[in-house]
Image (cartoon, rainbow, N blue to C red):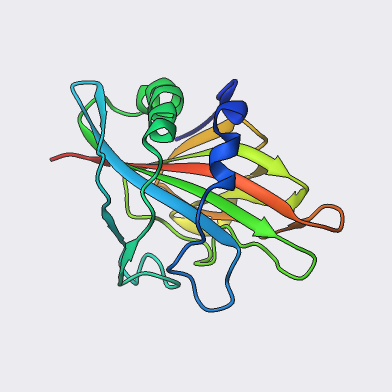
Length: 208
């Protein structure tokens, strides 16, 4: 399953916070296009709780050939921004579209930058799965961007593209991470200068 929705009013509430993100410290030398913050929380009996603590993020090398197999530490997401994500994205769009049970979630706030001499890569690991139950991607802002298509592939046939479109500002998509592989294509400036693609990625993992 995948579903596209709209998070009205999100862009204005979070725009400034993306300008304050720090560069992702886990990228390869020269890959200076990604800025990132991260936080976690849980949903128990329908109640959403955000952790105030920093947490390590880990994926296997099989899932992420670019940066899997290592513990990655990101700056902690601003608690007020995390609360907006919880209220506007998780509560209204993500959780209503998944089976009703308890979940652990992660919130990744990501800015991809591009310039005349630097291509931005939202998914440097290539076509992939993230290893969770559900993924929700929400576009918080686009500035002078060409590219950045959100692409879903059938997990049973990776040559079969099921979705290929740009998420516009305030659009959100939620999908089953086990049924789809996914990818976001590189971005370049639409006109000469600097461009930004700002997104929130929420991961949901069932608690057992």
